[in-house]
Length: 206
Image (tube, rainbow, N blue to C red; front, side):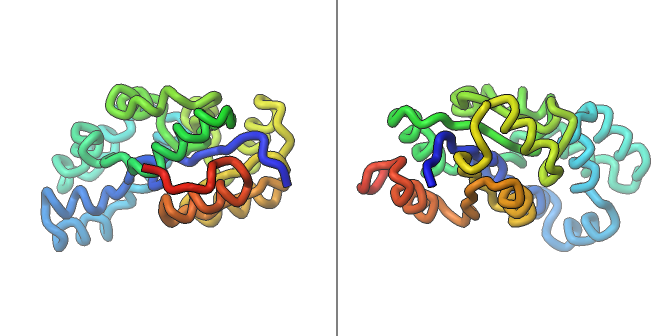
């Protein structure tokens, strides 16, 4: 089936997102395990991804859990140390698609403020033909509404969209709408999938 646009998730596709790894490096694995067992930090971040104010959400959570206040505030104050590094091979694939005149979109669960923080650090975030960022849209994957927004706004039919994500639940939701999907588990597999679709030349990327 023809692909008219490739849709990239960002976290763990273009930029590594491993908060546990960050906390392991600053407070140690044992204390990090205790913290994540006691606190649902990912649920806190989900609110940001849905459009809540980044600073207020983290600060409110820290004030509600004062035993971990300093560690929680790192989620805000050291966010760029947490969202790192770029997955360079994936970024090169994105740019290769653009050089081949293939439209590339972003569809990512990402906060309004965190996306603005990330853009000066990762310049490729300004290179999408259409960015669909959950915090700005007020809806997150895998809610079917966010996929419909992409379809309606871009004018690309569901069956002509190829969606790349590392989370199976997000891919299943897209597939149920008729999208083509690729489960990201590394740039090599992604390159092969895009070559099979005729979107990249049959050669290795640098």
